[in-house]
Length: 248
Ligand code: GLP
Image (cartoon, rainbow, N blue to C red; front, side, top):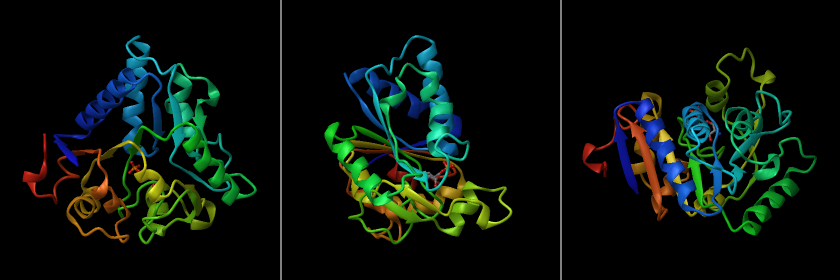
């Protein structure tokens, strides 16, 4: 694991965007797994800016979703697909069908999950998976207790995840409570992984992921086994780590 600790979230965003841009430039047909969440928003904005300044083309890239809410219109502002298209894909040079979606409106979520898993294999796997982390250590929507062997499937969301993702909700009834997510085994098969975290609220999850036991209680701890993992943190997210762990 390569652990990079930077001063603040702006630095995390710019170093992460540079890492992704370099990856896209160096690979003739990069296959990128895209995460959603506030932490990633600045990264997508930086990639769009890099593209608009003519320095970065995504023409040969293929994209894969990480997770999606169930029962949400795929293009609504609540859907992860809608967010990815609005903040990133619609603003760069990629055809509409270059995103391998997870359809949370599919009639048969098991079949949709199997279709997605096959698509990943047919395209040759995900080269670089971008990840955030939940305050409870989830990656994708693999909540604590998810099996390290899990594949893409329907999952129930924990109340703390809903509270964080829908801070203005008045009742749990009004928000999606289930999702479809790449499984932990699916995520772990990506050729390389870039995980970003900022803010004190993530410090405990990061400490458990990096220094805690390998345990399904902290789903992100599966990443301790990954051969090509880069973690970029701001000082707040790294505040419960031994400072000597940072590698650059
Ligand atoms: C959601 C997503 C995760 C993401 C997490 C953190 O729950 N399913 O993939 O990592 O939120 O999001 P944020 O960056 O907004 O804290």
